[in-house]
Length: 268
Image 1 (cartoon, rainbow, N blue to C red):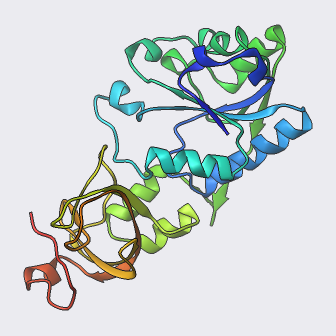
Image 2 (image 1 turned 135 degrees about the vertical axis):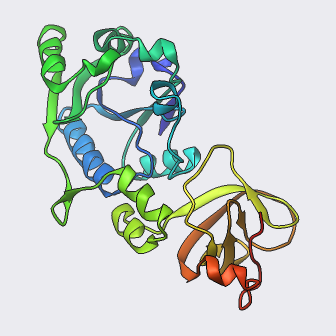
Image 3 (image 1 turned 60 degrees about the vertical axis):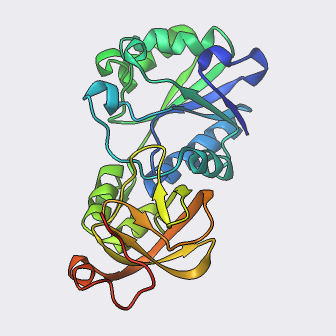
């Protein structure tokens, strides 16, 4: 898979592309469904399945604050490659990009390589003031020579799968629902100091204070503590440790009692 930093790094040899634009935080079941359509459309058009995403959550610029991440950016690239994506364009989301019109955004692609199609859901939109809807982009495509393929929404138990619902499940400690919507166990990636405290490059979604069963490089059945930070127990300082949550052992009341019954517990 080829990853490029911005549309201005695209080359003619990268195309033609079938592209989808989105944050893809968490790469949940709804994203997987969308990527299946992306790859199938690209194959049918002898094009390269492409994801255009961002280096940070757009809400940081649009709203002044961003939700905690559900996935480490490097993990996101790995899973996109596993899904069959051949090109990933990572855009720096700043105020300049926020003000970029949808047609200028598309020109940043078509002026450098071929664009065969865009994949969108019916409620998707991008560009300044979200003016780039399936309808407006379809009109642009008729002039510029690309198609817009609208994919029907993916629903689980009659409800669309959304990253915000997964964050809500994690923050409430409902890791089983988070796992069901993600299609895999929830995991965080960070650096660990000698005391076992994890730090993260960006804010990440964490469950409520408590003790949690987890899988880590230090053991397949570790216990970690969460209380604003994440602790996996003392040991050698390491970078890019992956902690995969496996279930709840005990909540805040357990920690107030001193964390008895597990090898490490969180502190503030």
